[in-house]
Length: 134
Image (cartoon, rainbow, N blue to C red):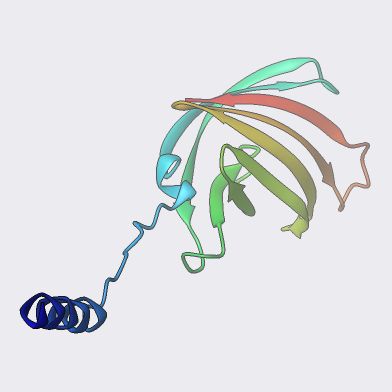
């Protein structure tokens, strides 16, 4: 009986001295959208289509969720956006004379944008756009 008790005590000491570390893999939502895209944009204000390229790259640290969209609106401007899961938010911002805000949804390798752009130099009416990037 003493032998069994000593075995249980020895096992208890061994198991209590073990340390278990669980490492969860980091997943960055931005990884799914970084790259170059062809864009087809429809301007509701001008009732016209245009085609151009954009490039999306990470900006800021891992937890920021920030991306930079280069050549946004085919105006050669870089817009800051945030990625949350399959959603992109373009907060209100002023870049090189443009007032911009909008959002997008990610569907696989396609991104659907809706946004508003206004030229602050000419004080023009806002241009409401829908665009698909792939």
